Length: 476
Image (cartoon, rainbow, N blue to C red):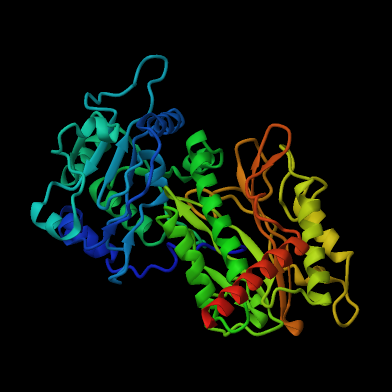
C-alpha cells in the first residue's frame, strides 16, 4: 500500500475535547457502544513490561497515556481497535483504559518522594448491565487481574485523575503523546488527552514520548514477527484465490469480497486497510477504494489487499490480467516493475535505506531501473510514472513508524513496492512484498506468492480450465 493508512483517518469522531473535559472521563465506559476487536493472540505480559521499562529508562517524568475511548466512530459496524502505541505497551485491547508508569531509578534511587506503585493500569469499573449488551470486559475487580494484565496495580479509570494530580506535585514534567498535524497524527484523541492533562496538572510541562515509542516499534520482537508472518500468509492465500477467481464480468467488489473471506476464514480479525481492487483505468489510482467497476476483457487489475492478524498488518500487492493473459504492453510494463523490485531487493541490508536520494538508496536503484527501461507512448522515460516511494514499515499499523532516510537495521519489516501508473493507457502495475531486514541482508517473507508473469498466467489458466470443466459437468 503506497500511501496513508485508513483506520484512524476514516473515523468520525463524536466527542469533542471540551465534552471529554466536562465529564466523559468518568463516564466513558458507560457511554461506549463499541464492540471490542477479539485479537487471536497477544505477546506474553513480560514483553510489554520490557517495553515500558525501556521507555522508563529514557524519561525523567511519568508517562501518562489513554487508550481509545470506544466512541471514535458513530457507525453501528464500528469494531473497537486500540490506539497502537497504547497497545504496544500494554497488550490491552478494550476501550476506556489508561496507563501511567514512572521513570526508572537512577543509580539505585528514584530521586523522588513518590511512595506509590511505579506502574498502573486503569480500567473501567465492572458494569454487568452494559456487559449484557456488549459482552464481558476486563475490570479492576476481576479475579487474578494482575496476572492477566501483567500489572501489579490495576485501578478504576476514574481514579486516574487523582493519581495524576498527586504526581504533578512531585514531577515538573509529564510525558504523553503530543498531537501533531500530519497524516498519521491521531487527532483529536491526542489533543483531548493533552487538554485533560493541562486541566488536571496546569503547572506541569508536557513532553512528547512519541519518539521513544516509535523507536522501539521499528525493531520487531519474535512474537511480532510470528504475527506478521501469519498475516502475510493469510494475505498470500487470498491473492492466490483472487488469481484463480479473476475473470472478465466480475465486479471489483466481488474479487475483494473473496479475498476478505479467505482472510476471515483463516483467522484474520480484520483487514489491515481498505482493500484496493482496481481494474483498467482504476489500476492507475493508488488508493482506489470504490470497487464498483465491472472488470472488462483486456483489463489489468491491481490487487492491494492485506490481512491483519493479532493486530499486525501485512501489505501485499499483485497485478494480474483480467482474462488470464497479459497483452504485450502489459507484460512489458509488468516486467519493468518486476525488474525494479528485484534491483531494489538486491540493495536491502543494514546500513542502506529507502530514501529518494543517496548512493545507498534502494529507492534510487528502483527508480533508475524504471527510468532506463521502456518508454511511454510519446517516447519519454517511465520514471515520471513512478509516483510514490519504494517502501514503508509495517507492524501494528500498515504504515508503522520508521524514517525513510534512516539506515535499515536488523529486525525491521518493510515493504518493497515499485510501480508504474500510466493513465493515458489505463495501465497501472504495482508489485509489493514484505521483507525482514537481517544481519546480512533480508528475508523474503512473502516469497511464496509468485511474481513471475508466466506462473501467474498458468495459475489463471488452470483455474479457468477447472471452471469450464465444472460448468460442463453441471450442464450434463
